[in-house]
Structures are given as structure tokens and as C-alpha cells.
Image (cartoon, rainbow, N blue to C red; front, side, top):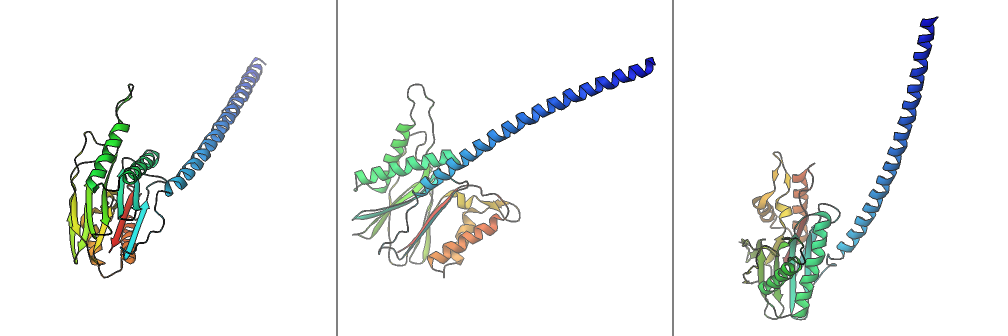
Length: 291
């Protein structure tokens, strides 16, 4: 009898332990559901915010642009995430056409914030003085970033900014001037490709930069191709290597017989084929112009 009583007590104890364990597990499950619901609500709110931010940033992309000075113009911005740090800039007044690609520090939200700053700074500088040379515009842009991110009231100094190329086409003289900040200038002049390597100056770097001014004569049939490093830095291929400028130039040159629209579409398809199943490495922006 004592042995039976002992086992009854043990069984009762196990039942009680199981009941308390079940109750505890149910409590944990309820807490996990609450946390899951909160996480889903936060994720939904974040996704909605980013989607709306994407709509705002997309307003930076110029609407379909046309001008009799250009026989063709094609441009695109392909952010790595929904929003990002690259942008294309086109502005025209009665004397000049300004066009640029800019690659801001970072991706996603930080990069997108810098694009809004950079675009508006650039727009403000050009509108306030329509006589500035391309290098003077970049220098003023650099100063604005330097001032905005300078140390104030104990804040840490931020060295973020952007790289890019700014071109100005004079509608009267038919001359093109350009200035580079860490990105190259490519042009096909009289059927021959000309690739200007950039200096190492960046907009918003550690020190005020002195940007160089370059000028080139352009005529009917000449082409300009500007691009951010996201295009050439894309990993892919059999050995998961970068696309690189050499491969980019080869594709542009091989597709020489195509019109500009087909040429850029072909390039993007080749880049997509190269990428394969790999994630997009960086934000991408380019602008292609044919006079």
C-alpha cells in the first residue's frame, strides 16, 4: 500500500508539474504572439514609410526629357533597395543644359537622405547663378556639404557626401564643359572613345576640394556616357567577380551599331545576365546622350 501511495503522489506531482509547464508554455506562446503582432505592425509601418519615401525620391528622377540639342538621351536609376543613394540630375535654362550623375555615400535610407540634400543643393546653386562653370558648381556643392556636416554644438563631424560628374552644354556655343568628383567622364568623339579618368576629390570629403574644369567640342553623332560605380562593381559571372569598366567598355563598343536606346537596354540585359542569382551590389545610375 505504501508503494502504491508513493506512486500516486509521484503521479500527482508529475501532473501538477505538467500543468504548470503547460500554463507557462501557454503564457510564453501568448507573449510570442504579442511580440510577433507588434513586429508585424512595425514592419508594415516601416514598409509603408519606405514605399512612400520611394515615391518621394522618384520625383528626383527627371521626367522624360527631350531637347533638339540631343538626338537621343537615356538615363536610369536602379537602387539596390527600394530607396538609395544615386540620382540623375538634368536642368535646362534658356542658355544651358546641365546634366549629372551623383553617387551618394551609403544605400537605403541614409543614401536617400543624402540624395535629397545633394539634389536640392545642386539645384539651388545653379538657379542662383547661371554663369558658374562646372567646377565652380562642384566646389560650392562641396562647401555646402562641408558646412552642413561641420562640428556644431558638440556634434560628431560626418564626412559623408557624394561622387559624380557634372556637365554643362552651352546652347549657343555648342561647347561642353565638365568637372569630375571621383567618377570618370566617357565620350565618343568623332567615332573614337575618350575616357577621362577622375581625380580623387569627393564632394563633402575631409577637406575643401579643388575641382578641375575640362572642355570638349561635341558635334552631331558624338555620345556621352556617365555612370556610377554600382554598374561596374556588380558581382557575378562564373567566378563571382566584378563587372568592371573593361567589360562595360567592351559591351558599349561591341554594340556600337545600335541606337542609344537599344545600346543601353542591351547593356542592362548583359549586366542582369552577369549578375545572375547574386544580390545587387550597389545602387546604379547612368545617363547616355547622343548629340
